[in-house]
Image (cartoon, rainbow, N blue to C red; front, top):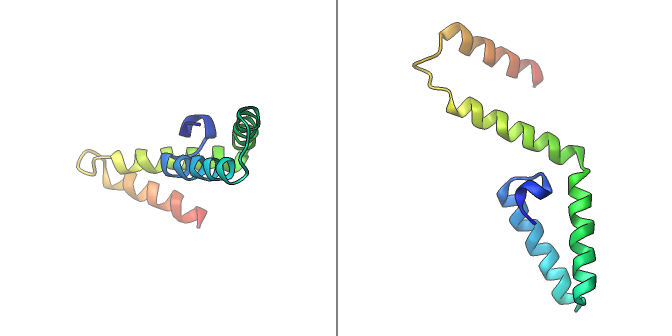
Length: 88
């Protein structure tokens, strides 16, 4: 289960994989039960609007961090700041 498949970041995907693995071990699931658990987990996260929204937010934050402040006009930075403040 990759981060892309789950629509989450890599840290969240690692946590989800650990939970699924722990559940499989604790409940001594058969291979078919593990496959079903993985399928259900993927379905749960693929269909989650929150996960999709988190991915969009993460990409946006990364894009903002990638902006070279020396190559952007101050008025543009102020505009970005204002748009973010409006969301708070």
